[in-house]
Length: 182
Image 1 (cartoon, rainbow, N blue to C red):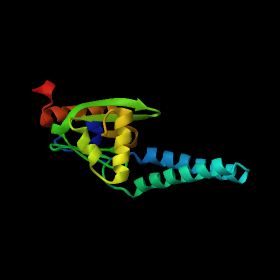
Image 2 (cartoon, rainbow, N blue to C red; image 1 turned 120 degrees about the vertical axis):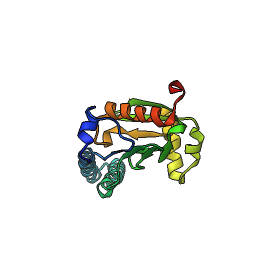
Image 3 (cartoon, one colour; image 1 turned 135 degrees about the vertical axis):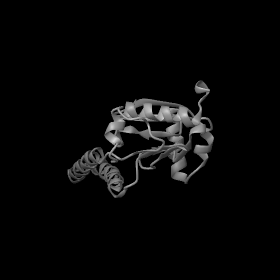
Image 4 (cartoon, rainbow, N blue to C red; image 1 turned 30 degrees about the vertical axis):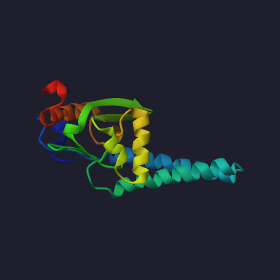
């Protein structure tokens, strides 16, 4: 984390032109530990005679644990806000680079136990058409669940979600000139 991160996130510092939000490795560690616990449970189910359910649990939670471990090798920021727009780390959400001019709304919503920052865009089809086939599938799934293909899992960021939303809106007004700010 940067030295000014705590001051910024508690509202005692003006929003800079460039804001880099790190990943929350504590949250990732808890999720990896729970994934390993479910893998062990799946193995016990498999060995206890519940072959299909045990194998499915072991494979699914094993894959999720491997996916979670990839976070520990990633030193890049989870989310970057700058004059050009947002850059979303592909491991915590869908979107990649989103220019402020393409943003039409920023909001928070709860999905299960996770908080999501939804970034509604003026041209969702451009996000649905870009990227690899798996990325396009996940963007489409995100679009059907959240009505936008661009979202950020706020639980995986080391910051206060409400404060980050406020800071993102400030930058959006400053650089993106949304209709209500013109």
